[in-house]
Length: 232
Image (tube, rainbow, N blue to C red):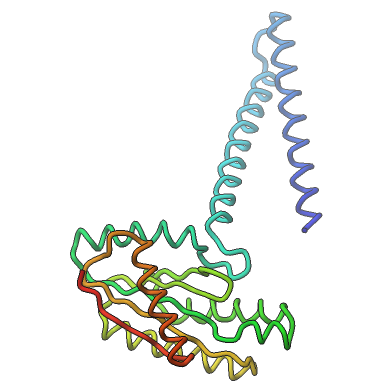
């Protein structure tokens, strides 16, 4: 925890509260005494207005930060499972309207438990962070990536057919293998890839299909890509 930031926030809150009390007190004294507005009184009222606006701004920022934290995986700083479901639902609804294909992928890190056992959980965390960063660098800004579970990541590639998905994800798998080799991490990567000509009835149904392909890839390899096209 950053204690400096904590105390700075606490001090700021105390100062604002004190300013608020002083402003209200002075305004009340002027009112009860029947004193006409003076430059000092006007200044205090402007200060009061500033404090209110500042507090509203701080509240807005705090709520924004809370929303971001609720939608972000704490370790990798990418979308979490809940956020992925929300984003995927919105995107699949859009693609359903325009009848465009899209691809979903499910990535599993093979042997992450071995890394944790041999090198410690700190190295395992570094591996997860590095994988998340590598995935982000090798997909488009419009694509969605999330940490779906402990060693699993989900991707959604809008407007992406089977052939394009194969090229993108094969290249991504090669980049990840290079990353693992460079760091001497004894892991490989299994992919389940589903291209949808039309969206399934729900995100849950979509993820059931694509995760099934990922487990099929692990059974066949691991370190494989199992891809299928769904027209219904």
